[in-house]
Length: 188
Image 1 (cartoon, rainbow, N blue to C red):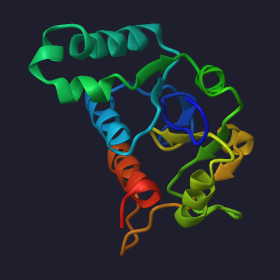
Image 2 (tube, rainbow, N blue to C red; image 1 turned 30 degrees about the vertical axis):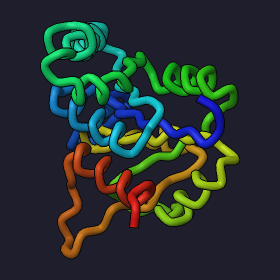
Image 3 (cartoon, one colour; image 1 turned 180 degrees about the horizontal axis):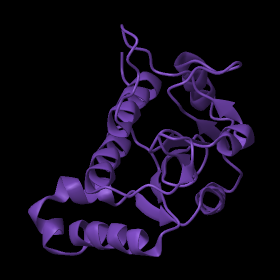
């Protein structure tokens, strides 16, 4: 990767559960496939699945391997192309370090979430920054009930939340990734 790179990371730890406890969420097959397809559609350089649970890491590797090297690679080449982007990382820091090595510089960390926060950047502002090519960006998406305050505090940027037309605001992470990717990189 050189210049103007962006990657996506799905964070399974540290995140909150519905009671506000810090937990590790389970990786789902749908998240692996659907977010990889969205990442490929919008030309992401990498899709990191971040989980410290070794059994979950092994499961992701098995699923990806099936579509990259196994029967699935010949059965569905488009799925293979999407899953070629997937990397498993045991922590957010490991994903960040991997991206830094791939890009040759530290990426800017961008956090997403359903709650509005002071100083958030708009999708238009972030799209302009990415298009300028001065930095590389790692876009974080949380599972469960969102990433911890520690993750938000360590981020370089917080992206504005997606707002619907009503009060309900609890999209699936797959939907949120698709909407943000379209707003940041979609053709108009």
